[in-house]
Image (cartoon, rainbow, N blue to C red; front, side, top):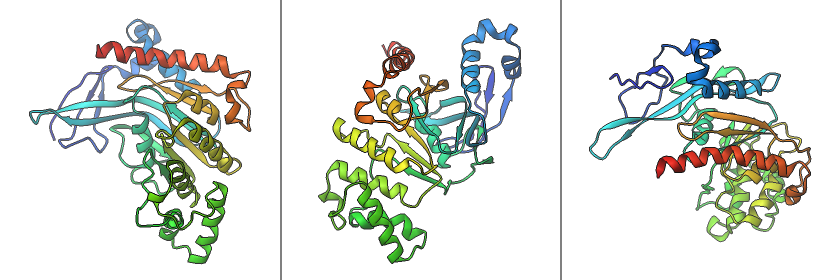
Amino acid sequence: MFRLNIHLFDITYYYNNGPYVSEPISIVTIHQKNLLTSKNSTAKSHGKVLVHITDQRCQMPAGKPVIEAKDVFRAFIARADHGKRYPILALQDASLSIQEGEFVSFVGPSGCGKSTLLNMVAGIFQPTAGEILYKGKPVTAINTDVGYMTQDDNLLPWRTLRDNVEVALEFQGMPPEQRHKRAAEYIAKVGLCGFENHYPHELSGGMRKRCALVRTLIYEPDIILMDEPFGPLDAQTRVILQDELLKLWDGTGKTIVFVTHDLVEAIALSDRIVLFSRAPGRIKQVYKVPLSRPRDVFHIHAAPEFPAFFDRLWRDLKEEITEVELKAS
């Protein structure tokens, strides 16, 4: 283990020697307690940080959360051209609480830690500091209660559509007759009847996404993580799939955490929207979507509350995007 000091908001990090930091590392807090408790002494030098911390924590909903991020930092070790390693801080001081049955979307500039936080909820890797809790217990390994849908559909090319949909049920040991029945129900819900025996290369992009969607939902995970699942699709197909997702989710009580770069998509789908700052990302603001349910995603722009809320969200996001562009120029 080697010591590498990075002073960021008066915190010193110790990194394990490796291709990336995969486990929590020691943190020596020099002035962090003062930063959080003494507003008078830190308001001038750290006022912006205090606003962000206050914003995100004041907007945590009441009740028992199913997912909690507590003061989460995540760093990676990257390799330079000459083989030297240097640290990259992807996410800093992120605290968030998500209730059971909520639909929460993450938005923010590219590289701001949205997918990083999603991966930590899934247990794919661990926080460098802080903790992720699932139903009150730390996530220290792959979270088997989570279903994960990414940008890529990851369909198995040697399996038919029905066999791809059933793959998770097979791992669960469900008898063939029972899983065929459940698969048929889900396939019908997304309009893929008649294509059960088609292979992935015989399906359109939208059909492949529908297959990936029902494959994620069919084994009924408690948490559904979706990382830009509709990103590669054309606009019309995206809206259709958004509508199908809401219909599949409605009334299930499942929790969905959704990453997107599309603000309209986030507003159409979500109960709350979490805005991340530019990298290294922190949670800048959490918004409650002022639209009632059920939602008509095809006419979401016509909702009376939509224009003002969209403008506010875009204004806050634009500040972060502009800062990224200025730094790059």
